[in-house]
Length: 295
Image (cartoon, rainbow, N blue to C red; front, side):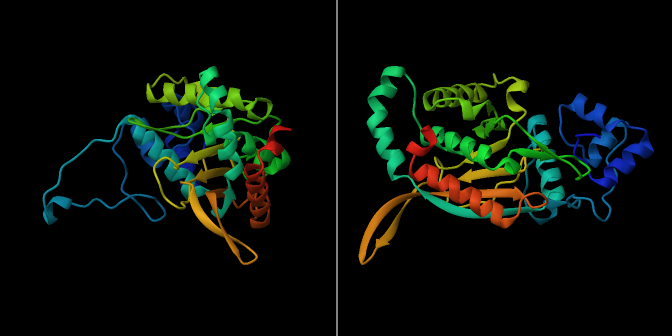
C-alpha cells in the first residue's frame, strides 16, 4: 500500500493518465501529490478546478486596484501542497490546556552557570521535548501512523520529536531522534545545532523525516493559542505559545503563576477527545514538575 498522501480523485486521475504516484512523489521529494503535480508530470497545464478540488478561482485582482506579484519558491510550493493535502484529508481537532512552568524556570536559573560552562543554551523547549518524549512512550497511540487505507495502525518503538523551525526560506522540521533516551543537556545541544543548521539551509533530507510528533513553538513570537496542522504521517502535533502570568486562587489567596499555553491537534480517526485530554494533562503535569521527567 502506498504511503503517499493523495485524494481519491487524484489517485483516479493518476491511474487514468498512467502516472505512478509513488515514483512521482519520490522524484519531487514529496509525501503528498496534488492534481497540479499530475498535470505538470504529464506535460500539460493545470486542469480547471472542479467540485471537490481545493483551489482558488482565477480572479483578475488588478481590476480592483494596484497589485504586484511575488513568485512562490519551490520550497514554499512543496510545503503548501503538503499542508493543503493534510488539512483536507485528516479530520483534525485541537485540544487546549496550559502548564505551570514555575519549576522549569527556577531550574533553568539554577542550571545557568552549568549551561554556560557546557556552552549549551538550556531553553524551555528542551524540557518540552523531554516531556513530550515521555508522554509518547506512555500513550503509544500518539506515537503511531495510520496506513493510507485507514485500516492499520503502525505503532512505533522509537520516539523521534520534530522541531518546527521558522527560517527565511520557509518552515523546516528537523528531528531530535530517540528523544526518550537522551538527557536534557544532549537534547538542548541538538535543538541548537538543528535549528542553526536549518537557518543556514544545511539540514539533510534524512534529518527531517520519521518523526513521532512535531512541536511548533511560537513562544518567542507571541500569541495565546492556535491550531497547528497535523504533519502526516504523524497523528498529532503540539503547539506552544508565549508563557503568560495567570492568577491562581489558593482558597482566598491569589497567586501569580507563569503558565505556558499548549495546543494539541490530533487525527480524530485514531485519537478521541478523552485520549487527547489525558495526554495533554500528563504533559502539563511533567512540565509542572520536571523532576518526574528526569526519572
